[in-house]
Amino acid sequence: MIVPRRSFLAGTTALLAGLTVGNTPARPITLEPGGRLTQGGWVRGRLAPGASGLALDGNPVPFAADGAFLIAFDRDAGASAQLAAKFANGTSAIEKLTIAPRAWQIEHINVARKPGGVTDEDYLRLRKAELARIGAARGLDTGAQGWRQNFMRPAPGRLSGRFGSQRIYKGEPAAYHSGLDIAGGAGTTYVAPADGVVILAAADKPFSLEGHLLMLDHGMGLNSAFLHSSALLVKEGDRVKKGDPIGRIGATGRATGPHLHWSIKWGKSRLDPLLLLNPAV
Image (cartoon, rainbow, N blue to C red; front, top):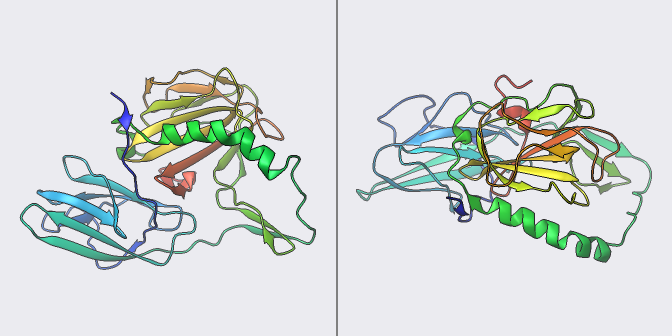
């Protein structure tokens, strides 16, 4: 059953400082190897038995019955954070974390930023229902277990746009690129990068920006979005396995050509999809 998800972590986190990485049962908090401890990255971990709560910078972090959890780091994550665990016996553990910064691809353009084709008021009116639907989808807890898996590339093709890249027009920054663009060719089938549940499928009416938008919940607050599809092969509520066909690449919505825009969020944090791939290619 799909139920509304409680508020997930909105803040940032960091590279391990003084916390054992690996399987060390004696430690109250263990971070597993294989994570990407950097801006836009992630790490999985495990709590010792008897854990009753986990928080990052005071924000609650969900964890499974076996103590497993996932935390992730926003593109603009700060340099320090605190991971705190509580246990049923009244004990607690606090770990100071730091994260590694990233050198994002920044392009300075010596011209003024062009105004959009519609006013802000008109655009917000147009987007209100779409954004509400996206927000409601991200608020669902489906119990999916894809967050435990190594992710795979959803489609073949040239990487035509990288996460975090940004243009600055005469000192005015535009929004940074929130996902990974894959130029796989119009009509190319893309697949689920990990197990999940379809929480949004805009099959009949494309969204103004995203076109035929598809979203998967991977569990623990982690979800994928696939933009600009020419067709969707699944419907809302479907459970999919890693590698299952879920849509076809297109150029619907606001796109200059056929490509798959794949973005990932954990709570309110935007992640670099490349860093979820093993290896990251």
